[in-house]
Length: 342
Picture (tube, rainbow, N blue to C red):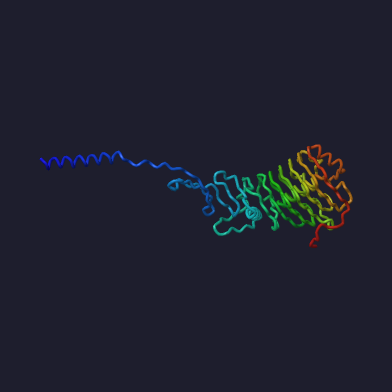
């Protein structure tokens, strides 16, 4: 009887222990996600992990470096961001077919930027770098650059003909929301500008692009002509241009003639009024040193190759909502602003 009782007690203990084990399940851990972005090779990855247990929940590639300083959005593949001076220089090299990819990066050509908008992701300082003009010729691509309000400081250009951030333009180009500060261009020739040197064809759209404390120095001997901040020379026989809400302030200009703050020469402006528009722009506090003694060849805004009298040309532009104030002009200048290598 005692043995039977002991056996019953043992069974009860076992059943009790089994019952408690079935009901005592551990609580399920609920992740507390946190997201961090990290660079893995040429990829930018969003890593989602639990802030408590540190388990990685997911990894998503959100962007990829095409070159150092040039980032392609992996979600919106029409968006390319230029992050640094190195990125902008690499962009120029790709567009001019001189780019050599470093180890770990893929080879690039200008078509990689086709149907894309380039954004500046930061202010960029190009001081100490001689800029190689980008040529958007007929074999190139249309291009859109949105500065997002950022500033390029210290753009430096030198040469004779078709000199600019974009030297020769034969395609469509849109530039907006960009500032140039302390840019300097020296030339002994013609068709030079900070943004575009020579627009031969295509459509140029420029909006909210501003120039401050810049020096556009063309020689008076030999004659440097057709110089401007936005475009040096635009021939409306084969192209169109739309400039709005731009400004040139506290800058200095040298040239023999056709040296203007906005567009050095707008060839055919009166004959092709339907192909150009300049609205809402301001030109203030600038100094012009001109080799010719004929004022009709110079204007705060632009001149036409028909050389309309300066007062009439100013009125012509101002009627389109543009303003100019406190600009000074000195004519018959014989001293070059720099010593050219002839």
